[in-house]
Length: 324
Image (cartoon, one colour):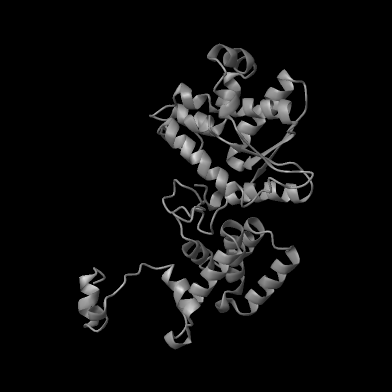
């Protein structure tokens, strides 16, 4: 599954498409078998082909929430770099790609240099990741006319390697654009390695838990997240922040953020249900209608009670079901 940390580059592609450009989303069927050494102090575990296939299929489904693959005039495309990397022989790769990239250039990348100097070192497998990504850019430029590669700021070295490879082999000038990694006020970044990832897959992070995560956003982060993680107009964000400054305890900006991001990822219906469930926890029982109860039941663990249990001592029922 993708996670919240991927939203900024995904929304960047969405913005380009809204302005008439042709976004190409790249699934890493080949590079996923290698693993980017960036941000790691040790070697990644290699994925089996079946696991990789499953991951690519799941991520493909998630991408459809952000990109319009049926747009008239400028439909988005989804490509898998395994399609052109797998058929390439090792001699072809060394001659057509490796010949044009110096080891000096690769070692200049901070993440690679740090790994080389560490006690664990770096394998040739992960060392070659930059070459694979550079070759992706060359292939997409030659076959689809891609002129701009975008990604998180940690991808800058890989992107510039691709720019240089295109210039050396094709003779064309192409470009790169990076966006900041999404971080919280405490300095932590969103991602899998932090151990508390907020996933886009509803089976891993429920829409309600997803919604609640953003409702609980730190006041110091909310304006930046409204800019980075939503498509709300800037004027609307300014109005929300003005309201927030007047009454921060009402968390209007956080709730607007939660609604917007949840709707983007899970759809409008899931966002409304999550909002109803969220408000249900702060209202009296007799204020909840059947729809509210249904929304709440979908967000917390539930158990069906028989008639006898419904009339039994509450503490005994809770103990019987492992709540106490």
